Image 1 (cartoon, rainbow, N blue to C red):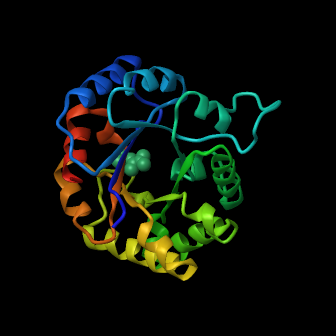
Image 2 (tube, rainbow, N blue to C red):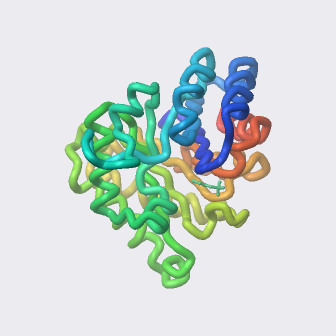
Image 3 (cartoon, helix red, strand yellow):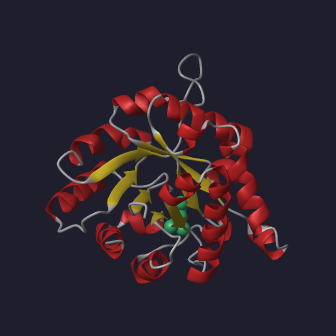
Length: 249
Ligand code: PEP
């Protein structure tokens, strides 16, 4: 069984005060054993968060990275810079990056490679739009996004991924996939991973994301192929995020 992982994605939200609040709360809280926890904070908060989370079990993550190692790329942030600030994880292919910033499968793959090269764990996000689901194309879309990355990686690189299934229609909408809907897609992802390698499929942390909150986390996390959560809105409230982490224990 993969170790459960609950990762928060603050998106372009939060503050230095909230960073301190989370550091304090997670240092003090009675946290479940055997659960990994992480927060993906905006770039400007990474250094402060690295310090604030240092004494806690909260790992540090970023929300994107450049596909380039360095150079004349104004406004970009490299994987090496993220490592220097203490990040261990980075989101890649979040639907907001795909739709709002035009990151296609090739761009996602380039960022996954850039993360792996510097030792960051890429959290590869996959998900279908409502139109794609209604057209019966959920599996084709999600597995297509998965293959666009996994086909191009070496076996040892695939094992360093985390995968997050995030139906686009459930992100930030308050509309959560039912546990059965999420489980069905997670099972399809795991089956596809098994075609690469059985051990890869067994060990892969498959997170669900899309309006996960304290009230629905336990039921989602109880599904056999859901190993954790990628949490947006509810990761901005210390108590809600702590409660979701507790549900994974
Ligand atoms: C996300 O941003 O990855 C996400 C799942 O957001 P929310 O939990 O707010 O739907």
